[in-house]
Image 1 (cartoon, rainbow, N blue to C red):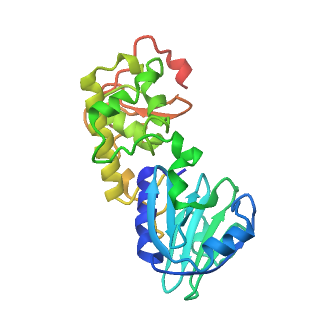
Image 2 (cartoon, rainbow, N blue to C red):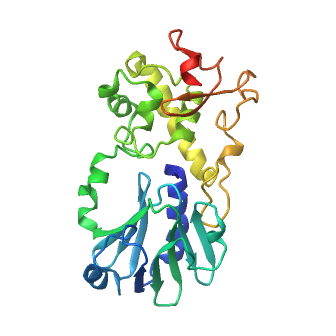
Image 3 (cartoon, one colour):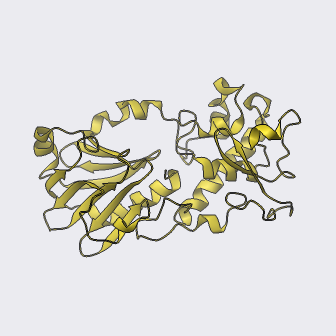
Length: 298
């Protein structure tokens, strides 16, 4: 699913397209994808004007003049496609991004008063759009569980290290992927951050020093910012708000580069199975713990 940089890229693209547009109608083609009562849609969505588009963790928030917000999670195969004077698609890169809409994957259609449309497509129906009072967004169970934003100016290296206190017996990669520890970090950026910080993904959280946490904090922020600047990453399931592939993986240190030389030391990048995910490491820059059985990582 898209990670923080990808969702931030989508938010920035949609912000240019739909802010100040007013909603004329909404058509829900799958109740699971749009768990909103017809009465609430009529009262709080129809006739409302889009005031802002923002992101929290991996979730998009479209704020409306009615005092309500659309809370959107694309999950694995979700797309948002705007069709108006321009066409822009974001999300899972299949033909729906460029083909005629609505199609068989279209779950929700928002029509604006100027005749433009925002389509929510989702092949697997894991994604969703909720309509909730803007003042209550922070109290949503999903939002209550999610950790701090890694790029927030008030987030410090000390606060970052403190977030891992209860995960001392976990390996550092699994802890990084825990959205309750830090928001928006997925597999790509966990691998990239650990490589930049020269830390093995197998290290136990409790074994890291404050200096190592500080190094990881800086690496994570640098990776996230560079990914946003490059329009996100494209592995298999993401294109940006202009329908273009993100460019970050061109600059990746390890992710997707198994069998290739490390950009720092020249050693061959390896790919293992760790923390339930494909994990890319440089065995020289990120030596695995002596007690780790490589057979368990295949």
